[in-house]
Length: 395
Image 1 (cartoon, rainbow, N blue to C red):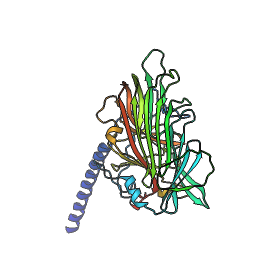
Image 2: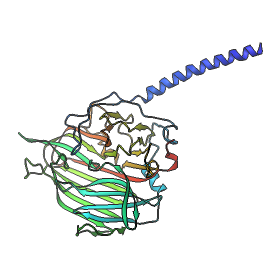
Image 3: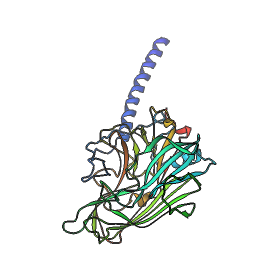
């Protein structure tokens, strides 16, 4: 009788466990279900050679310890990837910088393993805006830079991008800064300095210089080709590259009545060859492998101030041990919390699986929003490339 009783009890326990598991999975799936799919805004354009996405992907994020080391999802922010990388990659070596051409510089920031976060800054082809062009991992061999692999997508805007239609008959919408070969941001003043000493000689080929910090200060006017006399906006921009990574601060002051048909601040474009997963400061982990132009909605929407891409497969140069992270330093201003004219048809923040070249995170902070003279927009953030702390190692 005792054996029969044990068998019966085990059977009841098994059935109960199954019921609880099914209910639990259903609850988890419901909690993790992202917002409905949405189409990317009309007139979407993100740069020369970059095409409009034509699909959506509403897959839920991957969660739990098996997804990415000990990262677990939360209903509040719990991870600061930039700070974790800074603390894990503290090194005694200097930064290096050099001039690579007219308003083109390269900066090397050391991190663990004798490697360097290799950042490039350069001006647009058709206007003067100096942008963060690229982020890579390199080493130094007898004073020469040897690139191991890229992480950030070159040419794709990271700081901000606005499609603006000025008021008036026959006016044409343009992107600020340059997109698709149309220059719109022209310098009033630009100052690049190594440890406070301004660079005035742009002759390339000089040796690397040990520095503590590099600054790029810019004041520009947004001027459209259909009205070169009346600027659309003032642009103030500051980049700082130091042991803390690369920080970005910018302020746009609108000078005309206009409509910002689409606008983005602190974008995060990673090479598809590097990106495997996107992680947020809320602990959600998203696949970043599709290359079909689809979009993944972030279930935390505009609440996360930290994001990181990690490599999850292949690569023979240490890719799997590297993380590239982005923090939004002033999220209320950068994401325009509480302001009218943000994206209304879907989440503010979404990940586009552009193609075989790029995975790009978009904070969609303007959508068909009228601006008037004196209105302003401010954006701030930081990028950091370094060796990934063990706690975040994928497994």
